[in-house]
Length: 73
Image (tube, rainbow, N blue to C red; front, side):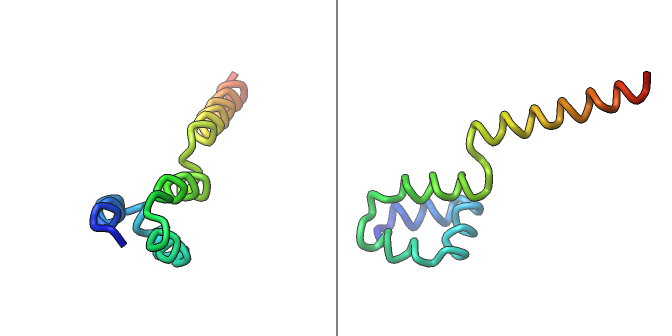
């Protein structure tokens, strides 16, 4: 595996955890180092770090706050 990819994985704890849990990525990165972007996308989808997941999480929190406010009325 290329050194720049190794450094990128080592510097990001979430990415490091994901690669350890899904070891097939080691083989993919060895064969095709350009697939690092796919790795990052896959990690974000699994850990729900995408923009749409964040928006959904925020809307759920807002709904919870509205519910509490309605209960307090």
